[in-house]
Image (cartoon, rainbow, N blue to C red; front, side, top):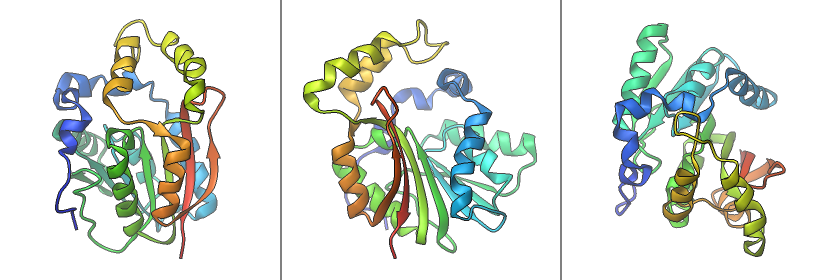
Length: 236
Protein backbone atom coordinates (compact mmCIF):
# COMPACT_ATOMS: atom_id res chain seq x y z
CA UNK A 1 0.00 0.00 0.00
CA UNK A 2 1.02 3.59 -0.59
CA UNK A 3 2.09 5.31 2.65
CA UNK A 4 -0.81 7.32 4.15
CA UNK A 5 1.40 10.44 4.20
CA UNK A 6 3.98 10.85 1.47
CA UNK A 7 5.66 13.63 -0.51
CA UNK A 8 4.81 14.73 -4.03
CA UNK A 9 7.39 12.66 -5.90
CA UNK A 10 6.78 14.42 -9.20
CA UNK A 11 7.56 17.78 -7.58
CA UNK A 12 10.71 16.32 -6.01
CA UNK A 13 11.84 14.96 -9.38
CA UNK A 14 11.92 18.49 -10.79
CA UNK A 15 9.76 20.46 -13.19
CA UNK A 16 12.11 19.66 -16.09
CA UNK A 17 10.76 16.10 -16.07
CA UNK A 18 7.43 17.51 -17.23
CA UNK A 19 9.05 19.18 -20.27
CA UNK A 20 8.81 17.06 -23.45
CA UNK A 21 11.83 18.86 -24.96
CA UNK A 22 13.92 17.97 -21.91
CA UNK A 23 12.75 14.36 -22.11
CA UNK A 24 13.56 14.21 -25.84
CA UNK A 25 17.18 15.17 -25.12
CA UNK A 26 17.49 13.16 -21.91
CA UNK A 27 19.52 10.24 -23.20
CA UNK A 28 22.01 12.51 -24.96
CA UNK A 29 22.34 14.64 -21.83
CA UNK A 30 22.94 11.65 -19.58
CA UNK A 31 25.47 10.10 -21.96
CA UNK A 32 23.48 6.91 -22.51
CA UNK A 33 25.66 4.10 -23.83
CA UNK A 34 24.07 0.79 -25.01
CA UNK A 35 27.15 -1.04 -23.74
CA UNK A 36 26.29 0.18 -20.25
CA UNK A 37 22.90 -1.53 -20.35
CA UNK A 38 24.56 -4.76 -21.49
CA UNK A 39 27.06 -4.50 -18.65
CA UNK A 40 24.30 -3.99 -16.09
CA UNK A 41 22.38 -7.00 -17.38
CA UNK A 42 25.53 -9.13 -17.31
CA UNK A 43 25.88 -8.28 -13.62
CA UNK A 44 22.47 -9.83 -13.04
CA UNK A 45 22.99 -12.97 -15.09
CA UNK A 46 24.86 -14.87 -12.33
CA UNK A 47 21.76 -14.29 -10.16
CA UNK A 48 19.52 -16.03 -12.69
CA UNK A 49 18.42 -13.27 -15.05
CA UNK A 50 16.89 -15.02 -18.04
CA UNK A 51 13.84 -15.57 -20.23
CA UNK A 52 11.56 -16.39 -17.28
CA UNK A 53 12.55 -13.34 -15.21
CA UNK A 54 10.46 -10.39 -14.11
CA UNK A 55 12.35 -7.11 -13.64
CA UNK A 56 11.09 -3.77 -12.34
CA UNK A 57 12.94 -0.61 -13.39
CA UNK A 58 12.21 2.13 -10.85
CA UNK A 59 12.75 5.66 -12.18
CA UNK A 60 12.98 4.25 -15.69
CA UNK A 61 13.24 7.63 -17.43
CA UNK A 62 13.05 7.14 -21.19
CA UNK A 63 13.35 3.39 -20.74
CA UNK A 64 16.88 2.80 -22.07
CA UNK A 65 17.53 0.04 -19.53
CA UNK A 66 13.99 -1.36 -19.43
CA UNK A 67 13.91 -1.96 -23.17
CA UNK A 68 17.37 -3.55 -23.14
CA UNK A 69 16.18 -5.84 -20.34
CA UNK A 70 13.06 -6.75 -22.33
CA UNK A 71 15.21 -8.67 -24.80
CA UNK A 72 16.32 -10.99 -21.98
CA UNK A 73 13.32 -11.11 -19.63
CA UNK A 74 9.78 -12.40 -19.78
CA UNK A 75 8.32 -9.31 -18.13
CA UNK A 76 9.68 -5.83 -17.52
CA UNK A 77 7.81 -3.14 -15.59
CA UNK A 78 9.11 0.37 -16.32
CA UNK A 79 8.06 2.75 -13.53
CA UNK A 80 8.46 6.52 -13.72
CA UNK A 81 6.61 9.31 -11.98
CA UNK A 82 6.83 11.69 -14.97
CA UNK A 83 3.96 11.62 -17.48
CA UNK A 84 6.35 12.91 -20.16
CA UNK A 85 8.80 10.08 -19.50
CA UNK A 86 5.97 7.54 -19.51
CA UNK A 87 4.70 8.92 -22.84
CA UNK A 88 8.21 8.67 -24.28
CA UNK A 89 8.39 5.01 -23.26
CA UNK A 90 4.96 4.32 -24.75
CA UNK A 91 6.18 5.72 -28.07
CA UNK A 92 9.34 3.61 -27.88
CA UNK A 93 7.30 0.47 -27.23
CA UNK A 94 5.16 1.16 -30.30
CA UNK A 95 8.11 2.04 -32.53
CA UNK A 96 10.15 -0.98 -31.48
CA UNK A 97 7.14 -3.34 -31.39
CA UNK A 98 7.99 -4.38 -27.82
CA UNK A 99 5.11 -6.09 -26.03
CA UNK A 100 6.68 -7.26 -22.75
CA UNK A 101 7.41 -3.84 -21.22
CA UNK A 102 4.62 -2.54 -18.99
CA UNK A 103 4.83 1.22 -18.45
CA UNK A 104 3.52 2.52 -15.15
CA UNK A 105 3.38 6.20 -14.25
CA UNK A 106 4.14 6.05 -10.53
CA UNK A 107 6.83 6.80 -7.99
CA UNK A 108 8.66 4.68 -5.46
CA UNK A 109 5.95 5.43 -2.92
CA UNK A 110 2.88 5.02 -5.13
CA UNK A 111 3.77 2.03 -7.32
CA UNK A 112 1.41 -0.89 -6.77
CA UNK A 113 2.76 -4.19 -8.03
CA UNK A 114 0.43 -6.59 -9.83
CA UNK A 115 1.21 -10.24 -10.27
CA UNK A 116 3.88 -12.50 -8.84
CA UNK A 117 6.79 -10.92 -6.97
CA UNK A 118 9.63 -9.79 -9.19
CA UNK A 119 13.01 -11.46 -9.53
CA UNK A 120 14.96 -8.24 -10.05
CA UNK A 121 14.71 -4.51 -9.43
CA UNK A 122 16.85 -1.82 -11.02
CA UNK A 123 17.20 1.80 -10.03
CA UNK A 124 19.62 4.32 -11.50
CA UNK A 125 19.96 7.95 -10.40
CA UNK A 126 16.40 8.21 -9.12
CA UNK A 127 16.49 7.43 -5.40
CA UNK A 128 18.34 10.66 -4.64
CA UNK A 129 15.17 12.63 -5.35
CA UNK A 130 13.79 11.43 -2.00
CA UNK A 131 14.89 12.67 1.44
CA UNK A 132 16.53 10.00 3.58
CA UNK A 133 13.39 9.15 5.54
CA UNK A 134 11.56 8.42 2.30
CA UNK A 135 14.55 6.62 0.79
CA UNK A 136 14.27 4.12 3.64
CA UNK A 137 10.53 3.73 3.03
CA UNK A 138 11.10 3.33 -0.72
CA UNK A 139 13.75 0.65 -0.22
CA UNK A 140 11.37 -1.27 2.01
CA UNK A 141 8.70 -1.07 -0.67
CA UNK A 142 11.15 -2.32 -3.32
CA UNK A 143 12.08 -5.26 -1.10
CA UNK A 144 8.39 -6.05 -0.61
CA UNK A 145 7.79 -6.60 -4.34
CA UNK A 146 10.80 -8.89 -4.76
CA UNK A 147 10.90 -12.63 -4.23
CA UNK A 148 13.11 -14.00 -1.46
CA UNK A 149 16.66 -13.89 -2.85
CA UNK A 150 15.49 -11.32 -5.39
CA UNK A 151 18.15 -8.85 -6.48
CA UNK A 152 18.27 -5.05 -6.48
CA UNK A 153 20.88 -3.33 -8.64
CA UNK A 154 21.11 0.24 -7.38
CA UNK A 155 23.22 3.02 -8.86
CA UNK A 156 23.09 6.61 -7.75
CA UNK A 157 24.97 9.69 -6.67
CA UNK A 158 26.25 8.51 -3.30
CA UNK A 159 29.07 10.17 -1.39
CA UNK A 160 31.52 7.56 -0.07
CA UNK A 161 33.70 9.95 1.89
CA UNK A 162 33.67 11.73 5.22
CA UNK A 163 32.08 15.20 5.34
CA UNK A 164 35.50 16.61 6.23
CA UNK A 165 36.76 15.36 2.85
CA UNK A 166 33.95 16.95 0.83
CA UNK A 167 36.03 19.70 -0.78
CA UNK A 168 38.55 17.16 -2.08
CA UNK A 169 35.83 15.24 -3.95
CA UNK A 170 33.05 17.72 -4.66
CA UNK A 171 35.39 20.35 -6.12
CA UNK A 172 36.78 18.12 -8.91
CA UNK A 173 33.27 16.84 -9.66
CA UNK A 174 32.01 20.38 -10.20
CA UNK A 175 35.12 21.33 -12.16
CA UNK A 176 34.51 18.42 -14.53
CA UNK A 177 30.97 19.47 -15.39
CA UNK A 178 29.84 19.89 -18.99
CA UNK A 179 30.16 23.30 -20.60
CA UNK A 180 26.57 23.36 -21.91
CA UNK A 181 23.33 21.52 -21.03
CA UNK A 182 23.40 19.81 -24.43
CA UNK A 183 26.72 18.17 -23.56
CA UNK A 184 25.70 16.92 -20.11
CA UNK A 185 25.20 18.19 -16.59
CA UNK A 186 26.59 21.70 -16.17
CA UNK A 187 28.24 23.08 -13.06
CA UNK A 188 25.10 25.11 -12.34
CA UNK A 189 22.97 21.98 -12.53
CA UNK A 190 25.31 20.03 -10.26
CA UNK A 191 25.33 22.87 -7.76
CA UNK A 192 21.53 22.90 -7.83
CA UNK A 193 21.60 19.16 -7.19
CA UNK A 194 23.77 19.67 -4.12
CA UNK A 195 21.55 22.44 -2.76
CA UNK A 196 18.11 21.05 -3.52
CA UNK A 197 18.26 17.28 -3.98
CA UNK A 198 18.97 14.51 -1.52
CA UNK A 199 22.06 12.51 -2.43
CA UNK A 200 23.33 10.92 0.73
CA UNK A 201 26.44 9.30 2.16
CA UNK A 202 27.23 5.62 1.68
CA UNK A 203 27.44 5.17 5.44
CA UNK A 204 23.83 6.34 5.71
CA UNK A 205 22.45 4.52 2.67
CA UNK A 206 23.93 1.12 3.44
CA UNK A 207 22.14 0.69 6.80
CA UNK A 208 18.90 1.65 5.02
CA UNK A 209 19.46 -1.16 2.52
CA UNK A 210 20.16 -3.63 5.29
CA UNK A 211 17.18 -2.51 7.37
CA UNK A 212 14.95 -2.90 4.30
CA UNK A 213 15.90 -6.57 4.19
CA UNK A 214 18.80 -6.59 1.74
CA UNK A 215 22.26 -8.07 2.06
CA UNK A 216 24.79 -6.01 0.12
CA UNK A 217 26.64 -8.51 -2.04
CA UNK A 218 28.95 -6.04 -3.75
CA UNK A 219 29.57 -2.31 -3.89
CA UNK A 220 31.56 -0.08 -6.23
CA UNK A 221 32.49 3.53 -5.46
CA UNK A 222 35.01 4.23 -8.21
CA UNK A 223 37.86 6.65 -7.72
CA UNK A 224 35.72 9.78 -7.67
CA UNK A 225 33.71 8.62 -4.61
CA UNK A 226 30.67 10.45 -6.00
CA UNK A 227 28.76 7.59 -7.61
CA UNK A 228 28.08 4.18 -6.11
CA UNK A 229 26.73 0.90 -7.38
CA UNK A 230 25.27 -1.85 -5.19
CA UNK A 231 24.18 -5.39 -5.93
CA UNK A 232 21.83 -6.33 -3.11
CA UNK A 233 20.08 -9.63 -2.41
CA UNK A 234 16.82 -9.80 -0.49
CA UNK A 235 17.23 -11.96 2.56
CA UNK A 236 14.88 -14.87 3.09
